[in-house]
Amino acid sequence: MNFELLKELSQAWGVSGREKNVREIILREIRPLADEIKVDNIGNIIALKRGTDGENSKKIMLAAHMDEIGVQVKKILPDGRIKLCRVGWIWTAAMYHDRLFFKNGVVGVVSCEGNIEEAKNDVGKLFVDIGCTTREEAEQYVKVGDFAGFAGEYYELANDRISAKRLDDRAGCFMLIEALRLNQGDLPNDVYYVFTVQEEVGCRGSVTAAAQVKPDIGISVDVTPDHFYPCDLEGCNAVGDGISVTLGDPSAMMDEYLVDEMLACCEENKITYQRGVMDRGGTDASSMNLSNEGVRVAGIALVDRYPHSQCSVISKKDVEAGVELIDKYTRRTFIF
Ligand SMILES: [Zn+2]
Image 1 (cartoon, rainbow, N blue to C red):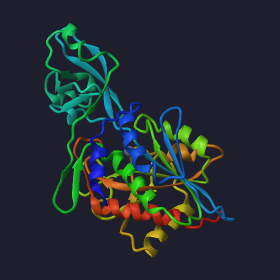
Image 2: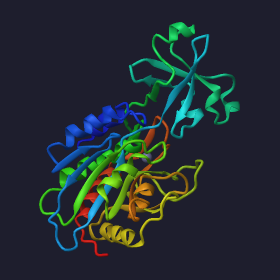
Image 3: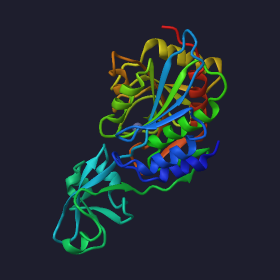
Image 4: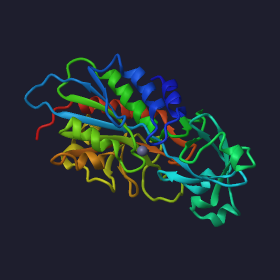
């Protein structure tokens, strides 16, 4: 599998609502692979791989989000410092003394008005230093309303691990692209590979995408937190233990039949998997679930250590297992 593409995706700038750079990489990759491709009014990519249209043929919508968390400028102070608001959920401490990239390429360093320990999780205590000492000077580079994303280079760690920014959810986008590459030949179902916008600010892109696709089955392809080392969460998921079949997602109840089929698919194909329960957060499964007249949903998740940081950690083997699961699962016949 070509992990150089995951590296490229992880490094692309794409804060929620500003996903163009990510979209262009994905369109370049999927153009030769899909039967139909559409970019909708708010920027979702909807790519169809058509099935054979048999009696039990279903419309399956796979959703991975292109956007990443970031910040937006809300004020520029007389001494040139820039004040921020969050775009998506961010740990204040994770931003401290790290770099930000504005869309125009301007770089800034995040610091804190006082002890970071006392800032708790208040992003209002932070500011960005872009190297300017007056408001007038700063405004030549950055304006109120501008968005910025984080640095977070791509590194290979020991034991097939990768660390980079925004593997949430560029790793999901990568898995969809690689699955579409495999998904050739006669297929029983119409499979929609959907790359959504604005997931990190409330699963918004998947609302309009699901309204267009009108799926029978919706599957979110996203990340789920790791619990192997002590952290702020408790659970049993671990990077390297296989692709996670979502059983618990606070934002949507996974359909019993679809989950059973997914577990059976892993067993039959000897795909290394783990049972995933996430007790905080949510995915695009939520908006697919409540779209149209209600849609059965399930989730395929990559276990991600230090999610929503600039250096989250995943396993290449888990990614490969995820691609195989997407490919094999979408080839199944679903009867309901
Ligand atoms: Zn995500």
